[in-house]
Length: 432
Image (tube, rainbow, N blue to C red; front, side, top):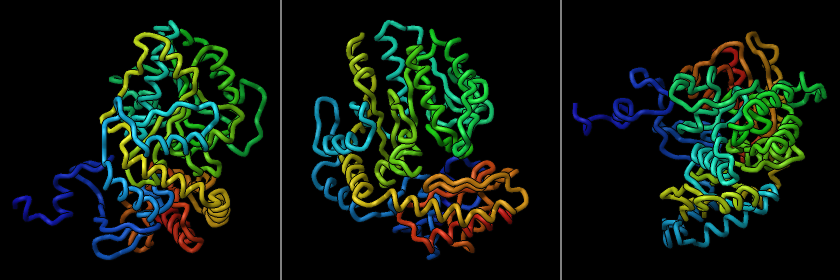
């Protein structure tokens, strides 16, 4: 049969490689024809609630009118222009908005293509800064285990090397420095003993590699793909002090946690300190177009500028794409133009109440909620394919990973829709 004779789904299954799939056994795949609000509409007319916010980015819902209008208007004027030696209003206007809502010390914005690339940019910034300061041996990184920072090459090197998604590449990746994840969870009392709160181990790691380590990178408060683990923010305050003492840059990967997802604008807001570099993506455009940015402070930016070669060695073709900048500015206006904090708090309260019965189910290890993140952790690995097979009867699209059945619903999810999501999660916890 020629490719022209294949149905859309047949062509997809025979020629399109989806993320984290075996092409010989691709599992259930749905053809989506339309998205609006919290719903995606399938080829057969079935409407499913997108409880994943399409991998955590579609926080204002699909096809939000303010964001799509901004893209349409920009498309008629300037879809793209190179950012080398040129600039444009969407990039400038977005920059002004970002400086209004991000930590005060972060004054320089580097636009890039995706979350993984923003991590690559952050790591390059850290290495180039250290070289500019005369520390040419500092080209490696420290991080905590169970972390995840993306699928590109350097970003993979700071994902967990043993249990992470990229462990099979371990021999090919740069060798980095790993310490146990922060042991005190969010909600527990902080323990001052460094031997118990993880700071003694972190100090030992950073001191031993201080002449090699350019930066310490981690996801603040919430480890996402590494297990939806929530830890105590005091760990970050202590890490800041250690990094300052040893001349190591502190990098926060807020790609998943930024823009209100945790109940704070950024997970950084749980701390009393600010990072040297922050990575932002996913919700930056409300999920409407791929985009990200890396922000840093004067010390790093001017430090790079004062060294050799003086210029930062990175320049993506689609850097500061006007369509993406316009979408991002509109998405941030939507976010800040509403009482997002109250909306996320209401989602959090409802998730806490409606997921609580899962604690009594067999094989449930834990139930936890932070902001608009709800997790049922099982004692066994849960099949995403099996969950997809139940989507039609639940009316909810959920995609578990590892042992976690979780949701990161759009902020526009109504109480009734959220109840449908939590019912679906409980159903998966009972059936899978």
